[in-house]
Each structure stands twice: as structure tokens, then as C-alpha cells.
Image 1 (cartoon, helix red, strand yellow):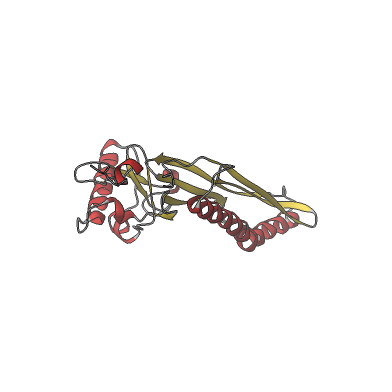
Image 2 (cartoon, rainbow, N blue to C red; image 1 turned 90 degrees about the vertical axis):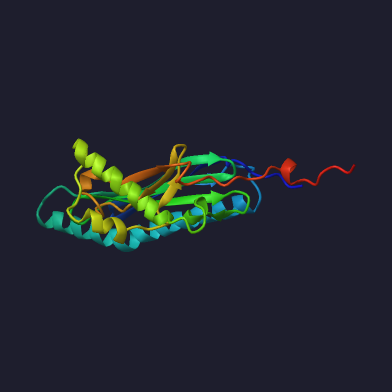
Length: 240
């Protein structure tokens, strides 16, 4: 019987590229994404390795297609104004947040400077089933027909009101409407404390707040981690 993978050991997959204009560096992009550690085999390891290899290449293509023209324009404007030459930088990194019981969860996050000079953060959540080698959808952590979206939105609204009352954060005036309109069921990851779901930067709050993240604890009325059978549990009972 094949071994059921309960955890995934990974190491960073790194890459860096610098673009120049007239032999002057104007843009540097760096990537650090996970890849299964040397010796990891099986369908899950192959799919995960391939997935983040493609994400790395896609990010570098994005930098070349969209950020490089902006960097070149800033370079030429600086030359005209006899100002210091800019060198823009874009980064893509990751953080593993859960790695137990056959579930491997993380988020990847890019950081770049926008045309207006402000930093833009973009986050993406991934949760993998190590037994099948495929991503797990958000709905899988809730009972059927339980109204999980309503529960998540209610938890986010309660947390926003709590932070408002404590004076711990500022929110956009239309955050109530954006809470529902900007909700994306793909924007989540698991943590040891509960299921974390998040919104894009600027969707609910000013830039200083970064990416708004809310966590719904596991347990009654909340998300539940799937119970996975061990090989001993799935084996046939001994003959009598």
C-alpha cells in the first residue's frame, strides 16, 4: 500500500533578473517560491513543483511586459530632469502557514512600486491535498449547505467593528459594500488557529493597513479540517 504523505518538506526555488536601458540597471525582479525538497516523489510533489515553476516564470514575464516600460519611462524622465536615476525592484515570496494531516497551505505575495510611487502588495493563497496532489477549495472545509460565505462575511464584519471601536485601524467609508463585492473564495489559507481569508490591498482600507486578513477559528459553527484515514484505518479487518 502506498504511503500517505502527511507533510511536505520544501526548499526555496529562487530566481533573479535585472533589466537594463542603455546598459544602466532600471529594474530588478527576485523570486523565492517553494519546491518539494530533493528526494520528494509522487504525483503531488510533481504537480506542486511544476505549479510554482510556472508561477515564477509568469511573474518574471509580468515584470518584463508591464514594469519594465514604467522603469524605462522613469529612467528617461530622470535623465531629462538631471535627477537621480531610479532602479525599481519587484519581489515575489512565500510563507507556509500549515503543514499537517496531509494538508499543505501557504500564501505567495508580490511587492512592487506602483506608477504613483506607492508600494503595491498582491497576495495569493494555496491549500493542497497531499494525497491527491490537487488544490482544496474553500467549501471543502464546511458542511454542505451551511452558508459558509455568510459566516465568513459576518466574522469579517465583526472583526472590523471591533478594530474600529478600539481605534486600531482605519477603514474605507464603503467597506461594508466592498466586503461582499470584493470577496473571493480563492483568497484563503490555513493556519494553526483557523482558516484565514483576505482581501486585496485597498479593497477595504487605506494602503497603511496592507492586506486585510481575517481568521475564523476551527470548531463549532466554523471551518473544520477534513479527517483523513490512516493506512491502518483503511486496511481490511483481519480474517477470523
